Length: 412
Image (cartoon, rainbow, N blue to C red; front, side, top):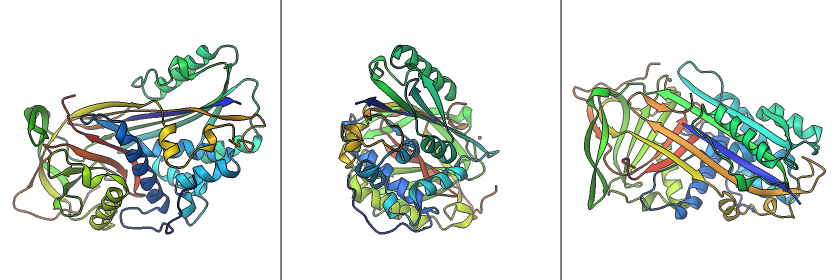
């Protein structure tokens, strides 16, 4: 799975404060719960722009990270609006410190999966970054600063940034930044890339993949390539009353990361999962089923699983509209206050995001995958994902929401 998000600054929300976040079964780190709420809010803000049958993948983690990189460079209302959108006001400690500490756990080397990040801040060669901002972003976010010549050679600078993105994603994302996104007025471009690759704890049988019915809607059926395994380790909650969905969890090798499937009982009925109410229902469901034993939902059982294989490439060419809907406005206008970052008057004129996810028999692939308590059963539980579904990829030790999306038609 791949994700790149870019934010551009050119020359020149008062979010509601709720109850403080505290550790829960599903969200061990309070900032992970803040990330979840931010991610679900972003998902719901973007959802009206999607076609009804469009498959989606986004990375709340990447969006959260790049906005956290902006934060030390913001002042006044500009800072407060972003801080509130990230739900950092409700954290028991400084939000940037909490996000940095969580990332240090998430992105540490693990033999069972590849999860890497790359943060880079491209600045015009004539621009001066304040030392305090460079030190802060280098220390907390491992962000490298790179000089380019936007003023005289904007297209050359754009190609350089795209080559960097391509390199960090093993060529999966070639042209994140289009020609029109970079001009002679561009002063700064921030880029964040996340790459994730993991093998299923129990792989699917490649030779058993066949075409089977996938119910795109109650009245429409398509033949989709469907994977099969008779010995998956999984959690399955059938017909959750609040979600009006089945909830299925498949762990990746090592059990530190999982893929969560929320499958509406009525094909394509995502209504109960939408909006703030839907996000709250999902959060409560995760908390009900996560007991905390080895960072996994219990009981985990042996399951016979059928599910579609799929690949999604999804771009969001304008994140600014969604951010405005989340009450972040000043950074997109001449009211922006980036004085802690640079003495120049700059503001954000471009925010874009691109992600790729591949799900196959081996697992989930990005650019470049221990034991779990089982409840004994004489026969495996049969689990069939043959209807549209939402999915999440989570880092279980923290509860962080790495990727989020939906599959409506796996044949596309």
